[in-house]
Length: 394
Image 1 (cartoon, rainbow, N blue to C red):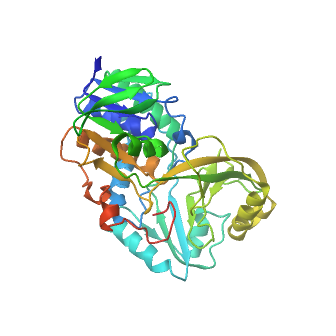
Image 2 (cartoon, one colour):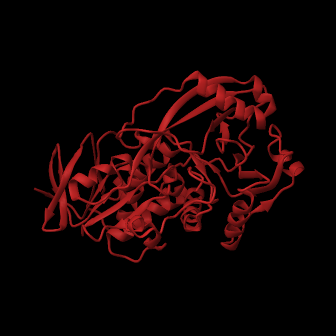
Image 3 (tube, rainbow, N blue to C red):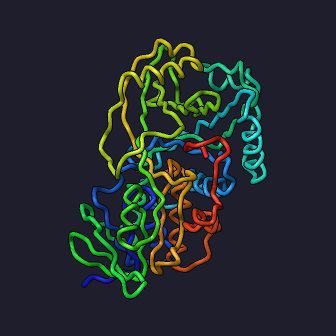
């Protein structure tokens, strides 16, 4: 019978962050169980965009704390070889006149109120930063210079290496099959490699968090959604010096960034294809969809009307009804701490998520209040609803 101080289920970017944070807070006998391999699940499918812009103000502090960690990643992990693959190019967001104008203005003001540098640009200033884009219809343009994108797989593997150095053990290819209970309290997990005991279990299972319902009886308001991403090669380069761009005026609320220093990575920020159950396999990206998305891109990036498809892939979000995560202890199941329903925010918030979930697991005060993220909010109607509509921009 193996006994640990804490068990983490899932070794994606959030789970590895939890593991390292537990060890950094003094809990060295930590076991991480991963059904696949470290960082190769939905983490490896992330578009990698980092920003603090949210219309849900509760998310801003998590994002702000996480950005600081990404900027000082090697120092944080005390590992000169640790890398986040950070490209600090800024984040530009624009909206035409209409229903999203006031929400954008309020969200930008909320960022400024937290001391986040925000610039308000006119069309000419925005064009200087992103010359391949047109801004003639923009009623409001915000620019966040302390933003950009990074590599989620690099972050996860760097966290794992740093956690191992502190004594954390990772077991890959091990599937958790249930929780061990002593009365109501969780005291461990049952796996296909045996039973492991610990006074606290932290679930960072992404879409597989739906299994918690069968294991514990708790309501898990979660739907797996597949999203399509494409990379386009146009006659003009989308360089690393050009900012990430969010187009609130397009039908799909497009987001895009440089990919490989020349191509454009682009996808829609709206709801995706709802799956019947957890499924991390690559889905189809039909040419009809590529053409439809390409039309939206060409409206904003005229030269990309001549762009060619360089590559395409899919990724799956674990989506809650309000597109925001469930974080913290579960009162009905003592000994269980959960982090699920990241709804496309998981990577950009992962450093702060790992720390607050580790703090919750150890019974410590959390850096950020987890009350707004409680599972009970879905029963009480206290949803963290984004002001831009359904989608990962929240």
